[in-house]
Amino acid sequence: MAFKIATSPHMGQKLQTSTVMQRVLWCAVPGLIAQCVFFGWGTLIQLALAIIVCVSAEAAVMKLRGRSVSRALSDYSAVVTALLLAVSIPPLAPWWLIVIGSLFAILLVKQAYGGLGNNIFNPAMAAYVLLLISFPVQMTSWLAPSTIAPHVPDFWSSLQAIWFQGDIHAYRVGIDGVTMATPLDALKTDLSMGLTVTESLSKPIFADGAGVGWFWVNAMYLLGGLILLKLNIIRWHLPVAFLASLLVFSSIGYLMGPDTHGTPWYHLFSGATMLAAFFIITDPVTAATSPKGRIIFGILIGLLVYLIRSFGGYPDAVAFAVLLANLCAPFIDYYVRPRTYGHRSGH
Image 1 (cartoon, rainbow, N blue to C red):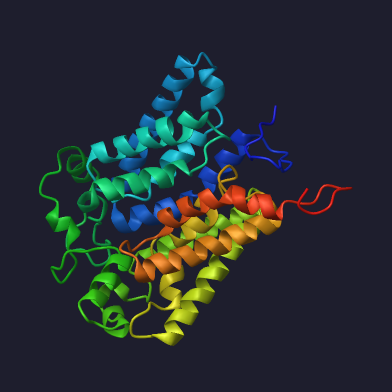
Image 2: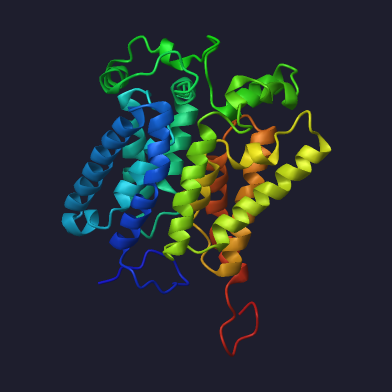
């Protein structure tokens, strides 16, 4: 039996939800591997914890509601939520961070609204925003990429750091002894200190123009996203509209102020851009549903990401942009829905 995972108007879907979710998971593997290569075992450990908590929370809610636990878990939606949250937080973040985020995503964002197909917000992004606002220090303490880090944690060191939060400062500094941040954090901090974009991008962390390690992570999620398109798991409207919008707005900003605005290349291949384009905004439940609506939805997220990155207080704006666009999705669908045959527009 094929389950519908889109809100009305329903789009025909030949594949079962479980098949779609499994293929999404497999296509995310290249990006996950890239994150592990550049940032160590911590990401896999966070993923394991997230899966355990998300699946357990989903099972508990189904049991309390008297519904089939096996049927609910077999759609793999809880595992996808766990993946998106785990790859979004720092690899050596304390264990309780991923536990809180996973419980919030499943219990309050997803199941409180009735479960899969009824939630209005993307569960992983809502949980990410909760954690970022509540625990900003832990959520912005990223590791130095392995290519420029003097010390790279092995599996056991990563496990101990996550569980006991010992002395992990050595893993968070680069070859110059400076505490590392994401490229988005680094550029925003440099600009606030009076440096120009050119001066900031000349630092070792920006050796490839987008951020050491982060370029390849984005490239691998791009690869996985293209496979999703090839398999017809997702439609082209959302990722193309989002990336084109971000490219256009970042190009305009850079041309108007090259000393104070990041390059288009930097915006496209830093942070969670490609992960968002193919694995986050394409959530069929919380996105707009019609082709025209998807294009508007993607453009809106691209605009919001650029504005928040450039003028807001948070460097990587994907989660905030997605949640704001989720609120607008019903409004977008209302005004661009196909006209019913025999009825005038607006009826």
